[in-house]
Length: 228
Image 1 (cartoon, rainbow, N blue to C red):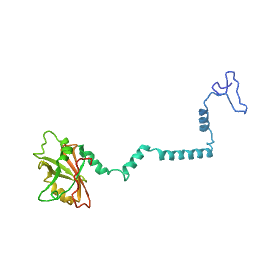
Image 2: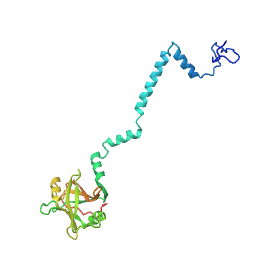
Image 3: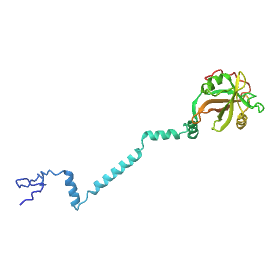
Image 4: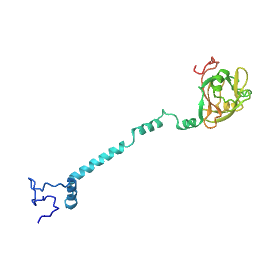
């Protein structure tokens, strides 16, 4: 009597053979037959096929490893670490300090600006009107004097006072001579660029002052607007 669960025996009890003598007509999935053959057979998978498969998998894994990092991330890191990028330290400090700000303006240092007896940096009134006044609060009065923080190009901090000096100029005083001495400013040859801003955290009025040195030994024509 035939086994009723034999995959190659039909209801009539006939055993079906394929043309090459191998049992056919089975409804059992090919994957299952292969697995059963592998588990129950003493013969292992062909070494040639196995090694070839391993080599392909290793090559594929290596390729995936080289390409697994997103292109956007690689590009970002390259940009950040390139010589053309902004210094992360300076940029980070500026980002944490600068809030609302004005357009920067430049002036040539005069003999009185670097005179220790004068002890002040003069700021023409047109610059105050264009760059300082728009950032002032209602309770801040230049005539009475406004305490300000002044930073140099390396973000070293100085305490100064911004106040009205005459009808034509305003001045930064008190801490100015320390700033002037620290940077070795020279009359006429040094040009300072001033940027006025509100501190991002304290909302206090601040300046950043940077400079450039030239071979100029004569006063230059005064710039009448911030975009000149």
